[in-house]
Amino acid sequence: MTDDDIAGIVIAAGAIVIAGLFAFYWRQRLRFTRGTDPIVSCSLRWWSGPVGLGWRQGFAKLGQDQVSWRRRLTFRSTAAIVLDRSAVKLIGRQRPNWQSWLWIYSCDVLTLETADRRLVLGLLPDDADLLLDWLGTSAERPPAKIHRTVSIAMGAIWLAAVVLFWGSKAGNPWVVPGILAGLALAALAGGFTWGVIRRRRLTSEAIGNEFVASAGEVFGFLRDFGFDDAFVQHFPWESTLLFTGDGERVVVVANDRRAHSLNVSIGHQTDKELSPLRGLLEAAGHPDPDRITRYDGSDGPLRAALDANAHALRLWGRSFLIERGEPAPTN
Figure (cartoon, rainbow, N blue to C red):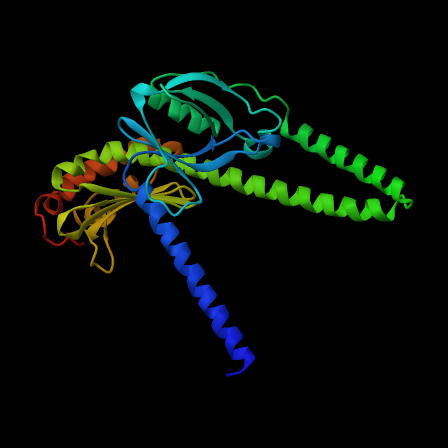
């Protein structure tokens, strides 16, 4: 066996281990987010360190009577902190200070108090409103201290002053500052790009959580037909709520935000393809079967589309809901 063969085996084994760890991590994450309870991205001030250190990114799950918090990068499926709704009291809501701004610059800071501790949370403004509504209280959104464009310009000026001073001390006023300025601009561009991507991802999760909360409420009647479990899956362009029941029956509610389209499908987990609810309406002679898939604009809000699909499922898919174990009706 040559050295190249050994190196290949080591690389392949490392790739398998990394893939296995990622799959296990994702499984544990899905176990925590399982259910119809809203999930919001929430940073927690774990400890108070210099220049804002000590923030831990995670998720907060808003249950019926409890809020559970879990770190984002962990292999645990259980929550690190669980608090009862009745034991949590809001102390204040404000923008982060300049040190915490380095880590949670786009978030509002909520200070909560329980009988034995004080918690500091960082959430996007929409997620903060959702958490406060869950607590049964409210607080006005604090105004931004400094506009983002102004803060970026101030940072660029500060970096330029530092590199020019360093270059003058080194005896070469242009070469060293030029190199450092290039590195600083690259770091600034990378940080800005990462911030934009993170902002879009968090905003997408906030919109998806709003959809899941509404869909879970509208389709709550499925519990009466044996659909006791629910799973949530978020993508930047789509959010999906999956209801499962006995006999491997499945009801999938998918919201395509790009196309402003809502699609409901029914069937069994062993089916190659699920039957779209639109197909049942078409087979029944509905004059506009595509109407239940559209929302926004002249078609009305998303909540109206959810109500229309729930009504159509109860009416045209009742045999599938009642006859447990029977195959889903087809076109």
